Amino acid sequence: MTRRRTLRPEEEELWQAVTRSARPLHPKVKGFPHGIDSILKPHPPSPDPKPRDLEIPKSWLEPFRLGQTARPSPGHDIAPCPGDSLRAAPLQMDAKLHGRMVRGKVMPEARIDLHGMTLAEAHPELIRFILNAQSEGLRLVLVITGKGKRRDDTGPIPQRMGALRHQVPQWLRMSPLSHAVLQVSEAHLKHGGAGAYYVYLRRR
Image (cartoon, helix red, strand yellow):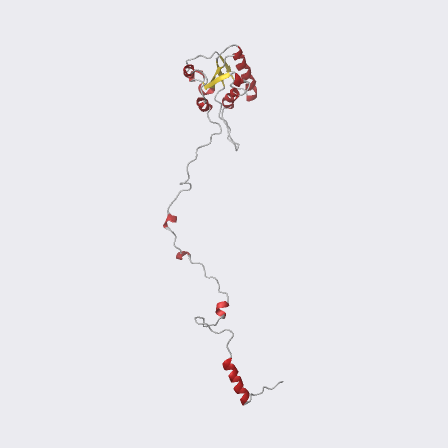
């Protein structure tokens, strides 16, 4: 075991001189009594403010209704009324005669009743009737479609009511009937109203 040796007087004096000239590696900084280490050490994050310390704007607390600022959008009708589109169509026939026709003052010269038929049955019957009427020199005929019956709609896509009522005006605008038809209008109530159409034919 090594014995601790005491310093001689000249060694003691030298040691004292060294300690007086030495400087600490981490001196104490003003405002940091614990030295520079207190600056370098990571500090824990400050806790979030308590809910009672937060100021909530009064506007957030005003009562509101979901969608109150939304602009109303126009409804989408998958099957708009055929009569509306027919009334908006350009007039191709004599205006005075058309006015008398839609008021029910002109009697149709022939008629066909498609009510109760399927689309596959009604289409060829309509073609035959219109072309025969034109070949006979007739001008005003009546096509009866019926208004259709409302059925239970359980599917994801809404089903329109009155398939024939919506389809017949389209058929009359398609070939081969478009070359024979001059004007199509919704019939007067005395001739079926919304469930029938006046078809004014071209001269051959």
